[in-house]
Image 1 (tube, rainbow, N blue to C red):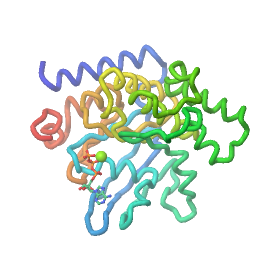
Image 2: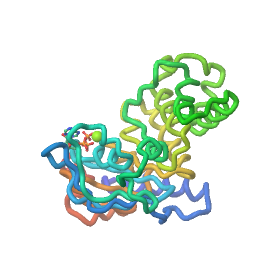
Image 3: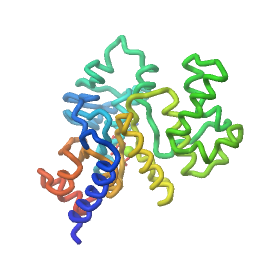
Image 4: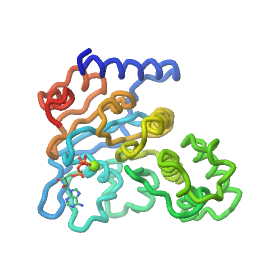
Length: 279
Ligand SMILES: Nc1ncnc2c1ncn2[C@@H]1O[C@H](COP(=O)(O)OP(=O)(O)OP(=O)(O)O)[C@@H](O)[C@H]1O
Ligand SMILES: [Mg+2]
């Protein structure tokens, strides 16, 4: 089987799972994020060049490309996580439901609640499982214990972790396995009730079984959330994403339906990358 045939097979399996599960069209076409002509700089160094891209609502969009091509930079630009890096600046626009997220009147804290983020090695706080998930809602002003308990339970259920931890919510989060910690961090992100979830290589530090659980979870979550995921693993992109964007040296080379990008890419650079000619 050629590489492209094996991608087709993975995409096909996903589509079958999907159509068994829901009635709505496989790829949502409603635009959640609309990035226009984004240039991004770390001091003098330009990391993104004139990137324009839309991100569809309630779908999974994957970013792929070689190390250093700007995937994480672009992802972090979507919830202003780059703001905390000294010397970082940009031009261009990033619209979330039509509103400029870099407008002067935007409250960054509430933006990051709407656009949550999970990192590659998300480390839980050295606190209990309960407190990790309750942290965001507490800061947001939820003090009522019953209300917090409900949020914690619902978030852990959505992150497919509840059954494993419901009897030990007061135990330290650091006693969980790596895969459980990653799902806990997803629960923590979900607890603030985001619309969009940004994930930077959320499964790259996990073993195959935990990776598979996180992939299943992402598949479930996209029913309700817009998900953007950076991954080094092209099979993973083919398995879980509806859309795939290929970056190279700070440029967005191509974004398309995952199936199209992996089977009939328009650009030669994309084809070379997905067939393993460079990486
Ligand atoms: N905090 C920073 N300060 C200065 N330069 C940075 C910073 N973060 C990233 N860069 C540079 O910006 C470019 C893009 O980096 P980025 O981390 O976005 O790439 P990436 O595609 O996520 O790579 P990887 O797959 O290795 O995670 C690289 O040249 C990198 O060295
Ligand atoms: Mg990165």
